[in-house]
Image 1: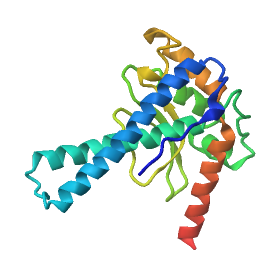
Image 2: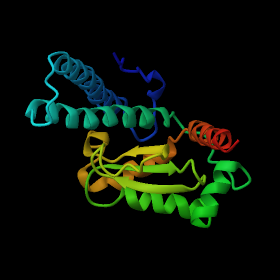
Image 3: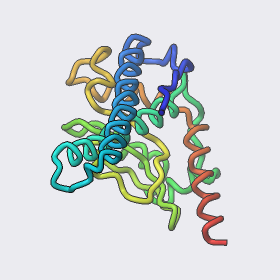
Image 4: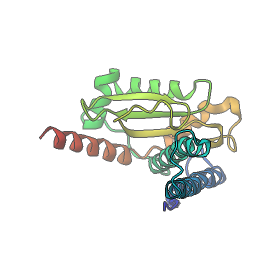
Length: 207
């Protein structure tokens, strides 16, 4: 059974009210609950030998589990890469910053691209992924939680741009204000830790 994390450190984010975060955490807790319920339901189907691919209930529960599970995990990454006031962005002399500059030309150009994706029409996620095979970093737009996530890649920075993430604080037309607030609160120590973990896994696999 999964337990919803508390994320008590999120109080006092600049430009993101405590009320907004509280509502968002309630939604996240719903994903955790659904994952546990669907996992139990699928286990019961298995025990009852309802494993035919023609069984509608099995098919729907399996597909739904992917949506709920990825929604749970992406929210945990999102909340974990935020903290009040954020942390200093890495410079191009640091490994994570250097990797961003190598792909986008500079950290500033990477940030501009990430923010541009965040302002696109539609709902979804903007995620900076690390490819463990070559160490490359790429910004992706992901609509539904389970669709469009690049297989094998590790999420380093996750931004939720579904309307539930900001519409208590901002109008629908003010999404870019939310994106700016998100950048104000990025915990770059968490991003760098994920980057370093990915680099270590890559080195271990190559050994």
